[in-house]
Every structure is written in C-alpha cells, then in structure tokens.
Length: 231
Image (cartoon, rainbow, N blue to C red):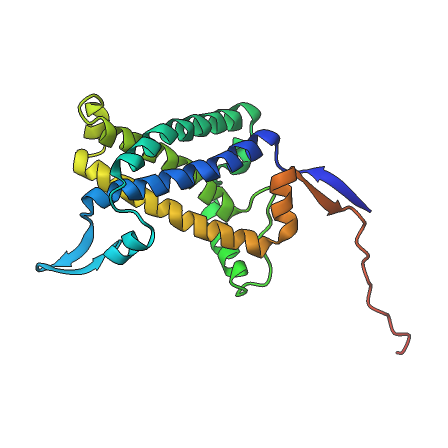
C-alpha cells in the first residue's frame, strides 16, 4: 500500500530554493568584479601555464567593462545571502534538524561506500535515514563555506573597518584568495549536486519541491526455497 510521507519541511525548501538564485547572482557578479583584477594564474619561472579565465571567456559572456554593475549586485545580494543562511542555520538548530545533517563518527567511512555505490562499484548502498553520509558531509561543508564566504567577503569589502576579520583571514590578499577558492568550491558543489539529483531520479527532485514523497508500505513477500521430499 502506497502512502504520502512528508520528507522536507517548508522552511528547508524555502531556504534551499531562495539560496539557489541568490548564489548564482553572487557568483556571476563576482565574475564581473574579478575581471578588473584578473591576477590568479599558475606561473612557474616567469611563464604562465594556466589562467583561470582567458580573454575569450570574458568576451563570450560579455563580462568586460561591467565592474560597477558587478559591485552593485554583489554588495546588494550579499545581504540576502547572509540573511538566508542565518535563517536556515537557526531553523536547523531550533527544529533539531541538525541531527539529520551533522556528520557522525562513521560518516567519512560510509561516504566512501556511498561513492562506490554511485559509481556502480559497490552493489549495496550503506544504510541511511533522511540523508546518507556523503550528503551529511557535503551539506555541513556548504554551511561552513557560507560562513567563510561571509567573513572573507567582509574582510575584502571593508578591510579597515573589519580589520580584525582581515587579520583573521591572514590579510587582505589571503582573504581574496580564500574568497576565490570558496567560489570555485560552490561551482563544483553545484555540478556534483545537479548530477546527484539526476541520478536520484524525478521522485526525489519532486519531493524537494512539494516536500512529500510517495512510499510503499506494502509488506515484502519472503519467498522460501522449496524443500525436496527426496531422501
């Protein structure tokens, strides 16, 4: 017998779907700002082997000469990003949802088993409740990254007024590098997250929108092997 079961709360779904366009705008506007000081590359002995964003990339996306626009969007939406993150963390703490999200002692070991199962190397997936071990680690890490982006962003935005944060980050240039690395981390998380959603299937994606999923509560039939009467 099939039944409808609540899987994700309204608050979780609200914060999830609000954060997606906000973070997208933050990354896009950050690219407009980064164009004005494109300093990061892999250079050895005076020879540049790799630039993170070549000129054709900027031209294809029409990024050049949009510094003021990027700063305006970035500094506006950073407040929505911060507020949404604080609301989500407070909700998980008050509701007790953090128990489902926080990694456990065996989470890293089980996360490796989850990865092997997703790669079809391991046939049986490790047991899980609402989230598996890999999801616990990833979702906890993304929360920590959010706070890291907020701290490093403030250190870059107002390095004199927030000199303590700037010092905590290791200085202005270190804070800028850390902010850049965190942004790359978000992009990688986006890609992996979308792939995982596709693998999980439509029903899982639908539950993140509606908050409910259809479960089969029918008792499983156990087929016993036939016993031969021959002696």
